[in-house]
Structure formats: C-alpha cells, structure tokens
Amino acid sequence: MKYKKYVISGVIVAAALILGLASVTTVPSGYRGVLLQLGAVKPTIFDEGINFKIPFLQTVQPMEVRVQKEESSQTAASKDLQIVTTNLAVNYSLEPGSVNKLYQQIGMDYRSRIVEPAIAEALKAITAKYTAEELISKRPEVSNEVKNMLTTKLSKYYMKLEDINIKEFAFSEEFNKAIESKQTAEQNALKAKRDLERVKIEAQQQITQASAEAEALRLKKQEVTPELIQLKQIEVQQKAVEKWDGHLPSVTGGATPFIDFSTLERKK
Image 1 (cartoon, helix red, strand yellow):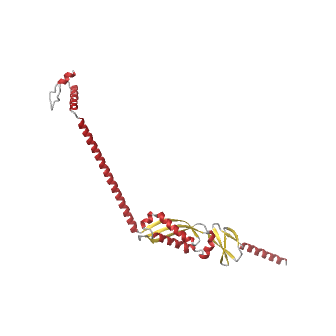
Image 2 (spheres, helix red, strand yellow):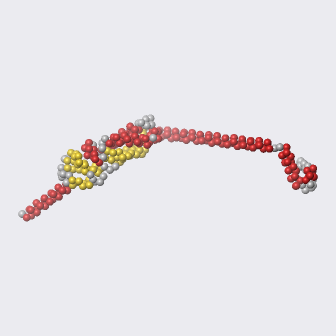
Image 3 (cartoon, helix red, strand yellow):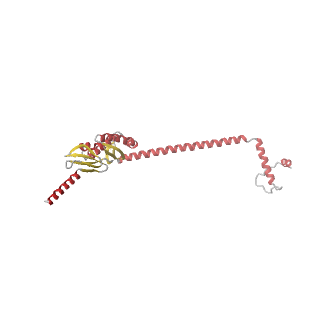
C-alpha cells in the first residue's frame, strides 16, 4: 500500500513535469513564432525567447525575420530585341508583425511561390523598356525601377525589400562583337581627330616661325646703310693692318686685300 502511494505520486509528478515542459516553447533569435491551435492559425505571434502555449493543443511554427538573400539569373529581351541575361541579388525580409498572415496565405514555400516569380517578372518588364546599350549606360536607373517594382510586389505578401544588386548584364556573342567594333571605330576616330589637331598646330607653329624669321630679315635689311657698309670696311682694313708684318707676300693665290694707305697715315 505504501509503495502504491509512492508510485501514484511519482506518476503525478512526472505528468506535471511533462505538462509543464509541453506548455513552454522557445523561439530562436531572428525568428517569430506563428501560433497554431489544432492546425488553425491564431492571431498571436510569439517573439523570440521563451513563450507559453496550451500543451498538446497548440504548436508553434518558427519563421525567420532576418534579412534573407535570393540570387536569380533571368533571360529577357531588351527594347531593341537583344537577348539579355541578368544576374540579380535580392535582399528581403518578412514583416515580423504579419508572419501569421504570410503563413496562412502562402505557407513556408514563399520563396519559390512569391519571391522568385516576382524577381523574374520585374526583370523582364524593366529590361523591355531599355535598349541593350541603355541597360549598361543607365544601370542605376534600371536598378531603381526594378527595386520599385519588386517593393510593390513583395509588400502585397507581407515582405519587405531591403536592397537589390544587379551583378551583371550578359549579352549575346554577336552583340558583344558589335559593341567592340563600335568602340574600336570610336577610338580610331578620336585618334584621327587628335592627329589632325596636332598637324594643324605644328603647321601653325611653322608658319609663325617662318613669319618671325622673315620679319627679322626685313628688319636687318632696313638696318643696312651706306655708312654701316663703310664702317664695316674700315674695321676689316684695321684688322688686316694689325696682322701685317710689313712684307708683301711673294706669292699670291687670289685677291690681295685692298689697304687704304691714307687711312694708315691718319692713324699714325
């Protein structure tokens, strides 16, 4: 009888312990808990940490509310009918206060049912508005339009778009060759233009130099007067006298410098 009493007490304690443990649930950090009662979604949302529920009748479905990343590669046609493959990274998060509605309406596969189709639709719609070259030159504008469209689409399903990053626009091989040829032609045209400008500058410099030389020669001619010529002759004769040793040369091979002896007399 005494042992029976102990057994009953032990069973009650064990049942109370199990019941107590079953009534406690823990929501991990970065998550919210959707409360389910016999499979039905309740309005209550559990925050991260320890929470209490009705044992065996209620369960909790954790849903991550931290920023999640989705990478997608989509092929679409540009405005000028070029095939463009876009690699896009999308950061988004679930609205913490609406995870129960998201779970009730979409479930846990919201990524494949909502996020991926929304990215594909936004990329194709925006890509079709721009030519292939504009997708490259107006990349920030394209990114902003994709972001706005995705924000609208995701917000309908209780999700928040954090940011997007267009990693790459990939085009067909034919288009890449056409772009390369165009760039080469533009570079050659620019080089030809620079060469022409250089030739013009050099020609102008030569003209300026020739004009300066002609002007200098004209001025020199203006400076030559009969008095100047006579003075130069006197200077030449004086230098010849200074070098003369008093003897006439025995052999002459050419013209003998003329010496004006009247000048020498005046010098003495």
